[in-house]
Image (cartoon, rainbow, N blue to C red; front, top):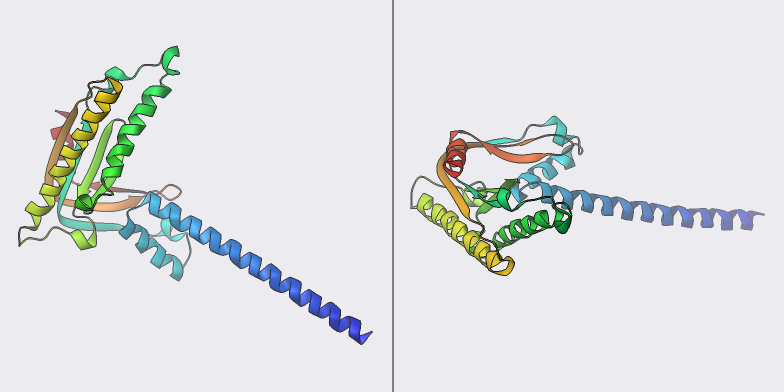
Length: 220
């Protein structure tokens, strides 16, 4: 009887070890998934801020703590496809507008792809609103715009180069899709406040008169 008890205890211990290993594997997979989602939602330096706090508390940090950062100089660009609204129509021939949205998605994806290039490493995409693309330079800690040493000129030149690269992408898409999309741009530099708003769907954004002026330059 004693031998059976020892064997039974050993088997239970083995099963518990397997269960513990499986639970740890599932927990690690969930943490990895949460991290990937967070880095897709937020810029890397902001996501890292929340992950650091997560180790000290939990994911409720997103809803409890307001992330904000003031900057003395940030370059902001708004780039709009001005005649996309003329192109968009809901017809049977384009699946009630789905094909129009598919082309817009292709354009935005091409713009996003540019940010993966080394020359545009200092630029952050902020958001897209309809057919308007918003980006900024000088937000990342390692690429902040300094007051001396030509830092502002260097970063703004990268932002202008990014705009020309966007235009080239749009020209290529026009050639392939037989369209005549045009790009209108507003660029400004100055102080902004960056922050994350929302709990269930956190969104990183920037605010300030610098942003408002760039937006008005694009829309007028």
